[in-house]
Length: 276
Image 1 (cartoon, rainbow, N blue to C red):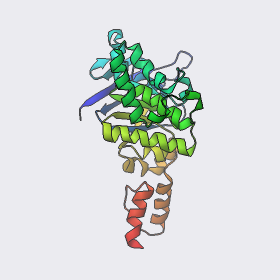
Image 2 (cartoon, rainbow, N blue to C red):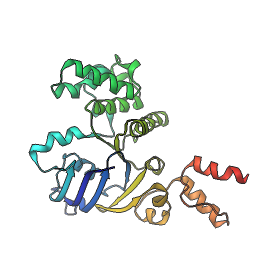
Image 3 (cartoon, helix red, strand yellow):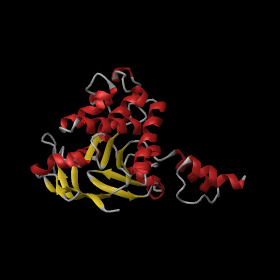
């Protein structure tokens, strides 16, 4: 996997603030990765998201997407075509009267031929499981369906990276499952690079890599088992750990030799079952 996004010693400060929201941050994301980003409120994670496709530009340092600098105005639209961002409230991103028209909105603005637009709409609706809802008005959809529609609109632009800023925070459990399954499918089956910002350790544990942002810098970066095994450190950063991690810690205190790296229910069941 080649490096696709590179952030080098980047700084960003909002006009009304004295502190840096992004404070010398360095990180990279490779093709095909599924990276979860966590951090407490004010840690800088949402600012970082907006820097990844040039919505915000570093005031110092560099952000490169596929070798192109986000500060290069000539490269702006090419970068935004490669890195699509979906935010937490889908209602703010839906613009058309019918589902299929909403998905077509982005490709139409690219000036694509009608035949190509139809192909992209069909593919995106199929990927998100929305074919049967294509003629529905978006306001009649459930929260999970709306968020999948927002993702479908992004996918119709054929991005190489999908960035999701807390996409499940406004959803009920069913909607949350729908969106998480869709994200996993896109990464696993389509090879799409996914950057998923979330407050939920259970959601972050689904990724292949977890990055913790604190005070505008990368504080921890590794596979979920490594990151979530550092429960006390995570608490210092104002973050929760998966429930299973608390259970394994309790078992170890009782003398049960639970292997390191178990952070999910399925992993725990698989390990416990032979013991029973």
